[in-house]
Image (cartoon, rainbow, N blue to C red):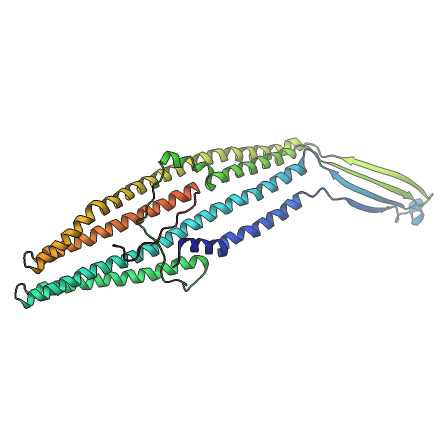
Length: 399
């Protein structure tokens, strides 16, 4: 039997969104290695006065210069570049974890769709069973002359509707299976059904306790890495305020007398601090924006968590009350009504209404349980906690 853990494993092994992060890391590591390079050494050769007139014409008047030049970086530019590049690599891990949780949540939702379709087939089968018993009883009453033919025809129509519901649920199951398998690129699902009990609703902590877990969720953790990137960008911008020094040293040979001389030069651009000031202000402003964005995201996540927590608690309560208080009484009423109908004590309309209510209550319990499961998936996605695999329903379980 295919399980939720099996689906998670296939996502982790095959989904391209997760494999993409490996390639992105290689790109960022290459950029880090590029940023860690020091300024290049420049070797040069120059020939002066080789073509001229008068005393400087010809080879004898030429001056040959061999030089070596580079740039002396000031202000910690090399360290700032390294820190900025490394902070981008570190942030990639959080982005991958956030994407992984999103994929797992989507997998769990699609898996739950299969579980829902399977349970709706069971409900339809339950309805078909009781409708068949009613058709048989209506036929007996018609033969005995205790009821008109319309009662039998109406019972047969109700049976046909129940069979239609089963056919619709079977098609929904096929679509749900294909929808899940599409996540890992399979067009023909390699499984017929899945294991899962939508009524297995575990107890969860209070919303205030779960809210404490939000700080370590990837959606907020990424702001920590974003702040590191922002701080590295500020340091990189501040390093531009210190002008670099261009230097050159070389040897010049005077061909006319065969003499040689050592030459050297140093240059530095002026106004580096004023030119770097706009970049520094911009980087600092981006850093300040991050704090506001994190606060807004934190409020949004907390609001979503509280809403999902409330849905889950209400759903779990309703499912439990329907199971413990409503369904037992409804089952006894069904049995009594079927017996009374066969005995001629009640009309078909009374029995049909009771059967419809019985199916409606069971559908209500299933829909409520599914909504609670969706809320639980959202809670686990928000908090970054591991997902709970639905346990297998026992064979022959009552819908």
